[in-house]
Length: 154
Image (tube, rainbow, N blue to C red):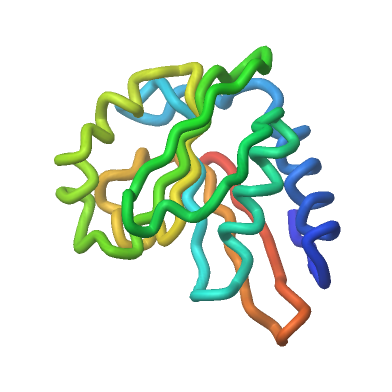
């Protein structure tokens, strides 16, 4: 699925389509079996945090959602059929998947009721499940972003 966004309202439409395609958790990733992991790939200012904010809002998170750049991980409770927790990670300050492992990432992966959204996923790619969902963000100009996602196989 590819999409061009010129506003946060457009990004919210993309997020809604994304959520609708993910209503049922995907089959367990090879060797994993647990949380739904979504890697967010793109440069600074390409729309990753805005996408997470839209997903969180659509899933019923009422509190403000900001990028966890300095705390690395923020968790939000959900009351949806398939997901009970939304984990928002920002790997920008991490050097590798080992840094994420030290923060208890493998425990998060075991919870099949968790949705994990990871900004800067390329920095921790070595620890992500092989079948994680990939969402790509491209900065086109000051108002335009190109978004796309690939599900299933990496």
